[in-house]
Amino acid sequence: MADPTLPPDFSAFLRLLNAHAVRYVIVGGYAVGYHGHPRATADIDIWVPMDTTAATRLVNALHEFGFDVPDLSADLFLRPDQIIRLGVPPVRIELLTTIAGVQFDECYPRAIRTTLGGVEVSIIGLDDLKRNKRAAGRHQDLADLEHLP
Image (cartoon, rainbow, N blue to C red; front, side):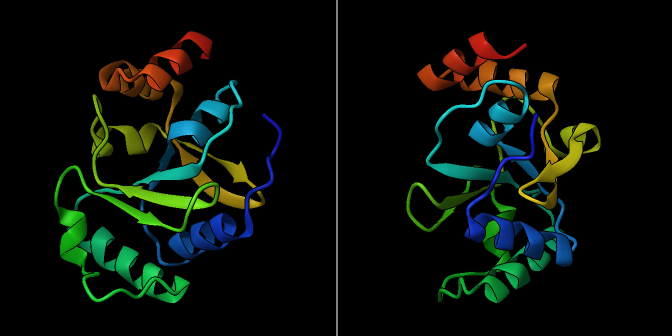
């Protein structure tokens, strides 16, 4: 896939995650596009592990990014099924602590290291993406599955 252009906020945030050594995996529409089915998406979905080190680093990156809300703490990222949203579509960042059908510690080593918009990133591998889409089972997920190789 060609290196797509990212909105400046996405690039800046991903660079901060890298600078703070946050482990993460891009999932959702950007991952579907990377694996061969570019489609419109209102956000970038970033999956983060539920561990204390990652959560602390992530909060530091969020503060540096300018996301400084009173309830922001590392504990927020240690609970399953959390979705933290920054911004508004089409430039929304969604931070996810869990996704359906797969485990972070299994997927992260298999993630693809590549470049998006000039930023080094980790994108969920194709087989893991398919498992996630099957398990999630929403209309868009099933449509994505039909178009993935």
